[in-house]
Structure formats: C-alpha cells, structure tokens
Length: 174
View (cartoon, rainbow, N blue to C red):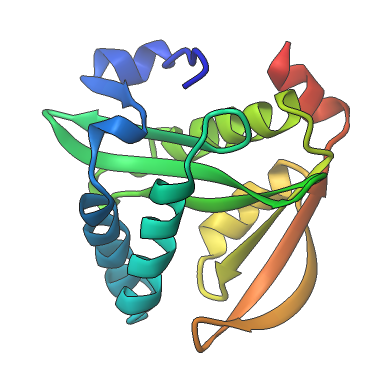
C-alpha cells in the first residue's frame, strides 16, 4: 500500500490505517453488506461476496488499491480502486460505518483513492452508486464526478458517475 497520511483529528480519535491484509474478504463482505442493508435496504450479499472475493484474489498493488480504517481493531471504513479499462479506474467501494460518519473520513478515503488512481496512470475514474445515497453523491460531485447514466447492477437501479482526472486530482498526488 502506498504511504498515506492519516489526518491528525482521525489519528487523535484512535483511527488506524490498514491495507488489504488486515481483513479477510468475509469481513469486508459483512461490513459492506451491513451498510447496504441499513442504508439502502439492499440485499446484494451473493453478488457482493463474489465481487469482494474476486477483488481479493486478483489484488495487486500496482493497479489496485485498498485502504481501510479501523478503530479498536474493528473495521469502520474502507475504499478500493479496481481496474475497469487500461485508462479507467473503478471506485469499487467507499463505505463508512454509521458511527464514524461526519468526521471527514469519506472525503479523506476518496481523496486517497483518487490520488492512487491518478498516480498509477489512470486517466479517469467511474463509480456506480445507489440512488438514495445523497450524501455520497454530494461528495462525489465535490471531487469532480458527473452523472453519466442509469444502469441496472446487481438487480438494482444505480447511477454511474465519472471523473476525468484534471488538476484537482493532480494536486492530491503532489
């Protein structure tokens, strides 16, 4: 995992940075599935399990990124970047537990993920998000993502957003 700097206020609150080796695929599935169930009323366990397992099995640090935060040993937030095409990264996940929201964790995770993607040569990033994740949509838009299209993914109506890397992401890398 490339070096990341945890903001002081998160370090002071007892958060610790972790990479993909800190949790099993099953722990990630349970964490994300819990959030999807609570926030979106979505039952995507089977598809999520397959997606997470594939990401873990195919993981290589040169084109994929996984960053998580834990507090008192428990997973509380995570993000991941995967390859979509040679020039396009997919923001695979960005999830923050309900108890940890409102501290800037989502913004920090997104900035780290985009800095990684830009730093390894991706020219743009896409993401697919649930329609009722309004706070997340505002965050994505604040980082240059724009709505591209509606899709059906995992039997759910979802929105696809895209960000073409420009100067704002380049500043994150420096």
